[in-house]
Image (cartoon, rainbow, N blue to C red):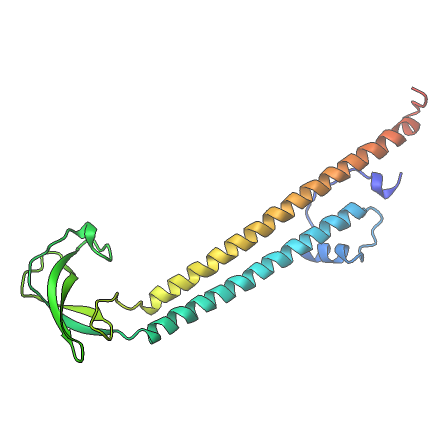
Length: 210
């Protein structure tokens, strides 16, 4: 009986380390029971490991790109913190605020910035702020309201989220493709083994002619 007729073995057997797969995929495993199907499986495992490595590299690149982009955006957007004076009491509930902070609300206020004149609008204030209170706000070069610039923690979180998302998508796709190809390989191996066993078993068992 040839090596091809050796009974199929579970691909997850102990000792099938990545190094063993590398050696087998390169055709350096000279053990007599190593089948071509085993070498094909090892090539799949090596390709899957390389795909995960590529996914990790892409995730690092996405993390760095997001961090750089966020940092550049903060530098490019001219923002300045000014003091606004509320002219009305709270005019909106906490659920209507821009940031969604539970203890915040909206109120009308006036403010000014050198070179842009006076402005009036609705700003976010602490819940319960009375008319005539002074609150800090952020404005652009034209004096228009803008969001508070992100902190380094905010940028780090956005960068990490981008990296994790990229890694999850690419690594998940690689695992799915590798698993699908491995199942097909296992199916073909079993079919070939059954066909060869059907041809050899009658001679081996003495049931010739039955």
